[in-house]
Length: 318
Image 1 (tube, helix red, strand yellow):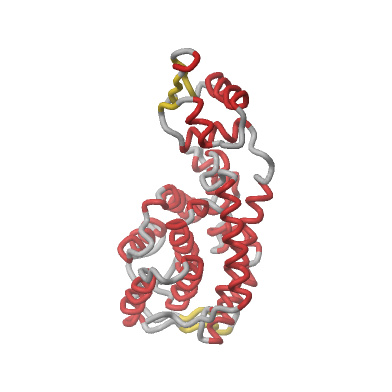
Image 2 (image 1 turned 90 degrees about the vertical axis):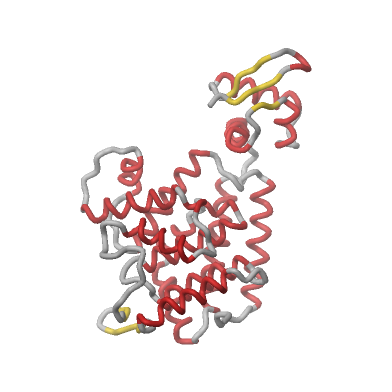
């Protein structure tokens, strides 16, 4: 059964704005960011998602853990970060429509932190806000049935992926299928759903905006609970996504520099190529600019050259 929500004028405006920004991002070759930016965004995503759950480690400490350096901090926080790094490193391997993939991700994310990670709860739970019970989750016996229905909904090809990702996030939080890790799984799986259609969401740190607006995030969940549908939460998450895309465009809104083009080609171009092949990816540059780029790529040890004049060929150095 399709989860309840309404498509409002605000929702339509946000979808239009997001679609326009994604088009601009693709046109500027930002759909697959350069390795350094991808690494920074992954760190920000992990830091923000875990910070919402009370993790105390800084971005600098997370960077040190990625580099296999020793970090002083609560053991639980360090395990959380290591688990998250493992999951986000393999995010593109997760199948958004697969309940098995979902449970596997929870197992990796919560390994060493809870009993029976990767399994649905076998207890009744209520979510407290201060001294008040803000939400009583459905009985644990209903969880497998409810989650199966939610994954069936994800397979509906008629649903807009942007909407689908928000609805899943809200409904999963409402069902509260795990004793721990529901928040980080909801945010992770929204990214997984979006990534299926839009590569830019692989490490787009919209979680940073959620962490900066935690009260609004939880209010949107609570108001949707009160209304019995996810409309308000959909609008909040679309606003968050829209703002994240805007920040990405602001960050990279300038004309691409030679190193940006070179790094992009290293990540996405063929291993053996000609200057013409290079220019076919960057249609706005001149032959002289392409030649300078390729010369710089050779100086940086990224390309090697063979042949001369019209027979010149280039090869990536692995």
